[in-house]
Length: 325
Image 1: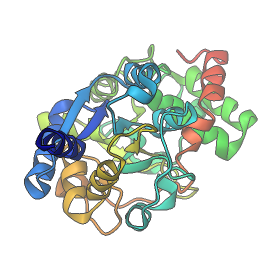
Image 2: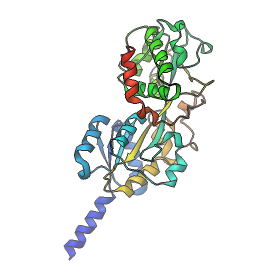
Image 3: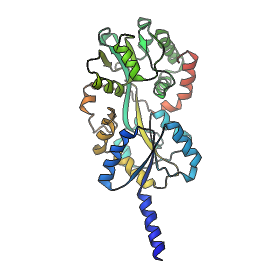
Image 4: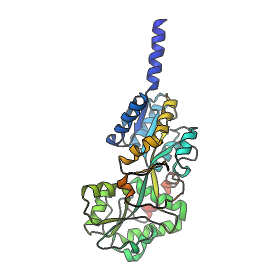
């Protein structure tokens, strides 16, 4: 009898742990997990890998998966996880209150936890802000030989083009992306940082990148001649995406996973979650870190970020078709 009670108690203690499969860098996530444990006493176990292998692992494990929560970057990846049947809907008035509807799944299978803006950057010695306007404008022949881009193989660019497809349709989007390719100063870069460094070096004059890459680079080299420009402020607004999370379909500790997710959306945790990577909080009650706020306010594009996933396959085909490598 005593052994049975002890086993039941042990099982209950184990159930209090929350197992997170995370595609985010461990150094970004561990301080947040430690803060949660300090506040609640709940142990969060972290399993880190890239999003592709983590999703494959969830598929292979099925009902036997120890995972309670999937944490990853980009709405395209979150949509893919939900579309593959790896996540489950969550009912949480608190999450709905803390996270605007355009930054979460319409079926509540995943929620954005931080905002990353993908906008225009320019060489301040060669370009004036008044010369810039929109993503589409970068296809204009006036930028011939002056544009740098990161590779189309990265999900961030796939999501940007997917959102453009949802908004402008395939004909206009293809015309824009084809124009970008025609205006390239050099071949596509493997990452945003190298592309921003090329702008600073004068190899090109303008480009598109996620803001936190700019933040990291400027902290390291504050004198680089790189400026940030919020794209499409006269139109629908700057493209935004999210890092976020969803409760795994066969979560053993669903209640614990939801509580952790709710805590991550709270005012107390939001700055910690967003500030660590120079991102923007999703909770509108929370102000961004001073370093991020210094870039200025901007109008977001309020199209639901799930479009990044829904149109991603179409976006990849379009980019291949026009020679965007």
